[in-house]
Every structure is written in structure tokens, then in C-alpha cells.
Length: 266
Image (cartoon, rainbow, N blue to C red; front, top):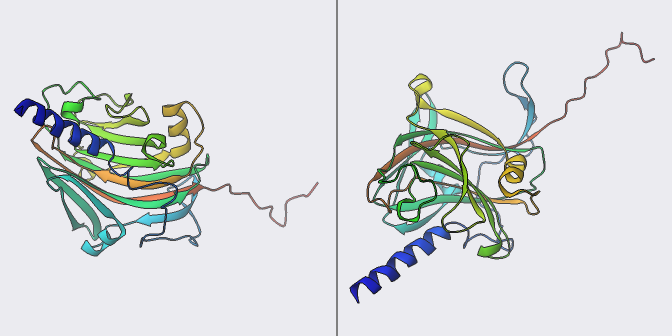
């Protein structure tokens, strides 16, 4: 009897974790949230000779009030989310002790070939696993840091999710389906301890359209409907910790070179 109850409880936790963010997000509930948006910002160029982008929206962690742009989903215990300042720049620290909760915010961007998502993050503490070489593992589905790009369908079973993972041991580039759903793809894009240089921060710049095609083998049919982040440790009963900063949705801009007055028009 005890084993039966324990098994039921385990499956309930697994189902809830599988439904993280997705059960609350559908194509019918993409209403606006308070967020730091800059739809009228001009085209910006990052670095000499770099590509140009038009900023669609930015989610900055300037103070604790910045978390009003996000909603939290709690499953077991509660991950501690605190905004800090470092060199006059804000960031979010997420620390978990045998807990699982995450933050999400709703957006609505067509997944066109020029759509990008960039952010900064830093893995600080990895959950301790008995089988660290297994990426898709229900009993140890914990990660120091993961970021979700969610393409919501009409219900849970029709939603697609790209789950970007920073893992301790799994090689970069490893891709697999979530242990909960074939429509949730785990994609390892960082591995191991954060580097000492640059304060340990790593910056990502992902083409959501191309990543979707790579992971699902087809073009996205729905817009990106939500962004989410998490650091959890409930399955392993250990600890995890990571920092996150500056989430930005942007579109690559085509810059047409203008002719000078001295150039021939022939």
C-alpha cells in the first residue's frame, strides 16, 4: 500500500514537472504581461563588423521589482530568486535546495528565420547525480540552469519546447527528447564549470528558427509564446544554483548600403 501511494506521488510530481509552464500557456492565453519592451528601438550593431539587429523586447533584472514581469510556477519547495547588482549591472540568482520552481513570461513572436534570443547565464552549482552521463532521466531530471523557448499549441500535447541546458558533464551539442514528452527537446549548449574570465558569464545568441528546425526536423508553425528559466534539484534532493541576465528577443536586420553622391548610378 505504501509503495502504491509512493508511486502515485512520484508520477504526480513527474507529470507536473513535465507540464511546467506548458499547462499555463496556450494560444488562447497570450495576453500581455508587464515587461521591459522596446519595439521602437533603432537597429543596433554589436561589435565591429557584427550583424545588425532590431531589438523587439528585453527582460532585464535591475532590481527585485523586475520580477513583476515574470510569473512563478512552484512544484516542490521553492527555488530562491533574488536580483543582485554586479559592476552596475543587474542579474538574477536562482538557488535551489531539494526544490523545483521556475519563472516564465509570455511573449508573441513569429518564429521567422531572422528571430533570435540572446541571454547571459552562469552555472554555479550542479545537482549531484548518480548517473551524470544520462541527459534524459526521469529520476534525476535536475539541472543547474535551463532556458525554455516555448511554442504553445492548443493544449499540452500539441506544444513544442526547446530546452537549452547547461550541464556538468554531457557534451555540448547533445540533443534528446525530454523523459516526459517527445515534444520537449533537451539541447545542451554549455558544459562544465563556468570560466573564471569574465566573471564566469557566458553569452548565448540563438536563432530560434534554425534551432527549432534542427530539433524537430520541420519549420515552426506557431509563434514563440513564452520564455522560461529554471534551476532545480528536487529529483536528486541536492542543490543547484545559477545566475541569469539580459534576455533579449531581436530580429536580424538587412542593412542596405546607400550610394554616395560620388558613386555612379550606371
